Length: 475
Image (cartoon, rainbow, N blue to C red; front, side):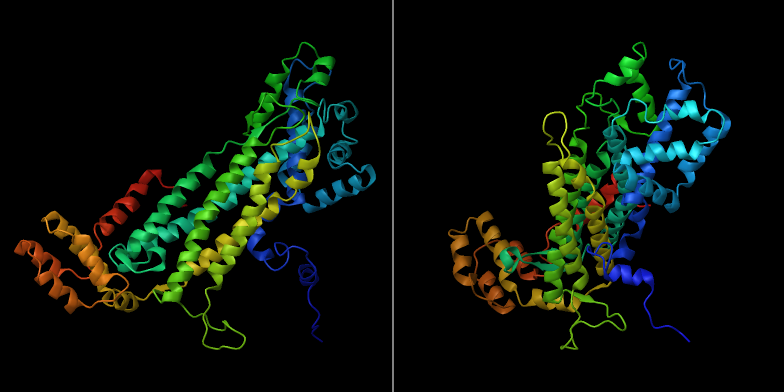
């Protein structure tokens, strides 16, 4: 008999305190192996193993020979194939030690126990390290991989999706709405291209942040290292490890890497998110005006009581999640670079929320992309608004009047149009009465709100073309 009981995973989702691990768990799946506690433990293990290998390769550490093949292979395999069972074992050891990094050290000792040479080699696991040497590198790898493998592809995806829509609509005239009022027309493609340029700039800023790492002991001076091996070039050994991890070294630190680079990344992400919030609100408004329709998805419900509604929920969801992400990212940027004297632990609990912030970024990207994919341009609606707004041509009329020396041009058009809607006939009558050259008069009489878009199309096309090689990789 089939069971109607929910799956265990559904129970867990229903009891999750955070929607990142509950309602939106599926949307953040690409981050789960990177920015979870499992990911943090996996990175810690990798760093401990790489440091042991660096030490074993150094001729300057006389008491440590090259790692025996079986031990080196076992440790390398552990890094390559580290699984959830391995992380669970580390957590079990932590339950006894009440120290998460020390648990990783003990687990590595456990892994090589019984292999030839393990007893002597075990003493060089975590050699000279403070916990923060391991943790700061683990978080650096986490943020780098989350950015490069997950966030940037999602952010590029939205930017390129938007660029494609802009390219298709470079010539579609649209009434501008400065201060929410009718204003000089533009084109839909130009307005979208504006945002593409902004997003591209912020994407470059996100990509340019260089992850830093420190690996220099309890207060950043290699105290224990130098005491044990005073003749070893420890900064060089540390740099070898960081190169192996593809991180840039920060040689001048206290016990902690000061997290300035994390603040830089957090700020860059918030700027990208803020541009998306701006666009989400604009698209929401354009949907309200009817400039965009939303493709109806079979089975979806817009309102529990009003059957006709197709709400802009994707853009609202994106805006909300972007706001939560920015609140966390802003806190990271303001808090993490501050540490009392050589170290305090206030950063430790804050850093554990990195995955949550990145998760909200990813959820927002997914919602935004979904929203964009459902948009359809309502050209007749845009044209109807333009045809109902002949007053916007007051700008070119008074500007040509000024060119040809007609006095009080601005005030005369203000008297005719300010706060009033006029039609094509009224405007044509006014233009016909002007004492300006016939060619100028004919140009004004030929003009319509839909044709008065300046060089918007050209600007949009050039901006999109200029992305070229400078544009973020769309792959």
